[in-house]
Length: 245
Image (cartoon, rainbow, N blue to C red):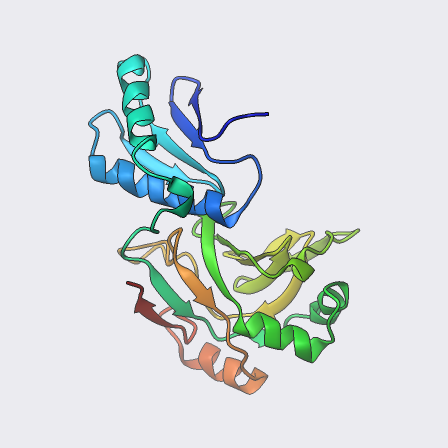
């Protein structure tokens, strides 16, 4: 059995600190918190940091750096606290993103609800009241993977492939929600539609969301959605945000 946290070099480009081999809230918390601590330490060898679901990556030129010294620093930092129960980074935000569930805009809600053991109204109630964390960003620029939903949303992948869902689509996959950045094919189910743009290339902050941010997806009507899309020029899609302590 592998002992975690686990430190591994990644070729000559950096070091990966893994907190688990499967997704869990404590392991994601550890990855986010540890990344913030590395950033705060401001080690000169580290040119960039990032996180996946359960890991922190430090970009380092391992040819130029003293690997032994760096590994000692990492071990010392890991020993300073229990990262699995550590506080999440400061400066995170809570987003309320208006969402149309079902209708012709998100035609797989009923199928997903049945697989989750719920009728459509109960599914909408559960999804619209859920509060999920951005676990990581990936696949497309700014695209968030958010979770975790209750266990009943651990539903199987489709047998086939949906040829394309639009930008802003809310997708459910293995207890996670995803807002699609661009129109894209998917093997998971399209349950809601937002007007929220996760990637804003002309903005000073092109990625709207950051790992650790939290989101809610309150239910709105099709008429409310149409009004948002007709008037919104910011990419916010009617979303409201607040800073978390």
